[in-house]
Length: 282
Image 1 (cartoon, rainbow, N blue to C red):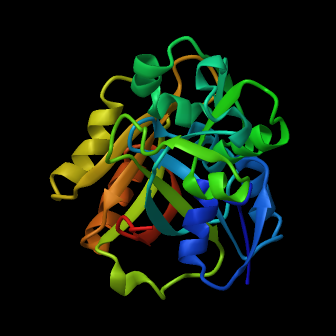
Image 2 (image 1 turned 180 degrees about the vertical axis):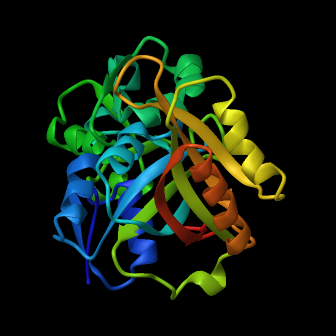
């Protein structure tokens, strides 16, 4: 089994992928879009991408690609606790007050803003494509006066010194990862208590009451929605689709609600119906 994931190795996505696929051949890919394009082109059996963080919300490049271009369904979800860690190159031990830059992925920087403001407000914040890329850059540029925010695995991989652990502002920080592929996955469902369906809904006409119509189809049937969010359709200003996560307890009731929305003029994009891992201790 070949699995592509948003890399590089030692990234949080790698950690989630390795936890889910114990013995698969794992291949890192540079961006979310390239990872999703690879599964669309049948280059892998599955791919794994981050879709939402509990602090920063939905990861929009993933959602937008899946809605507008994706045709391969979500087959599983992994929920991973996220620990952000501040690290330096060993050359800078004892000289922390000389550092001028902190590098990381924008999500990691956002998840640690309070910590950085209170402790390192004078440092310039620079963005990298991933937290692990920040760690690798630090390893490759040992003379630069910089620190990085990344995982403990990345610090170990690139022989960096962690000067403070768990610096995320919210200690319950978690990220949802989607496993996307054409073949059903069922080996983990006995360990899962969350059964979800994710859909995108676009109404035929942009008019008052559209959202109420959609929500009413679920409400009067007693169907619990765990998330609802609007995203631009990228057609013209003011046109949106709605992203909805449904807690599935009765598949027939959900199917009836979706049929009602269709009859009311809604166009539904089904991202998939899947079980989710509970947060894992790793």
